[in-house]
Length: 160
Image (cartoon, rainbow, N blue to C red):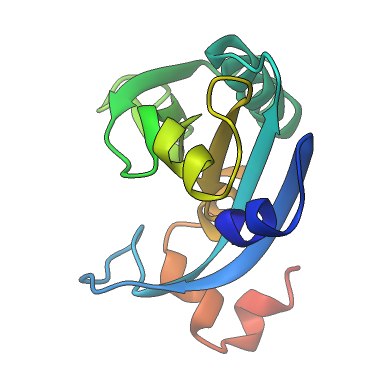
């Protein structure tokens, strides 16, 4: 969806776009073959990686509270460079187990992507991110299995 937005408007761009995603993946408590994704995009002159980190850090702070720790690690996503994943410290283990759970992928929009939609990559930069609202809800409300969202179990669904 981000590319479609960029093809249809000139910078500055700021957009949040929800949508349904499908991927070939084995299901377990934290992964599902179909899920919703919320994508964010900001493109303008002078946008930096610090803007990306600040935006996502503030998102996590407001959603999960100031007591949660946030970390960014290098990761690969084909349309951004550099790419990162953002994780928060684990709610259930309080940092004593693996300690972290990934909540989104992000990065600076690759210059070739900018050029591909007609933006001058010498003039414009931007960042993009994608997150699954089901995973965010799992962490926020202590839900132990992502498959509950699609089980049609009214006992679960009526809690919300």
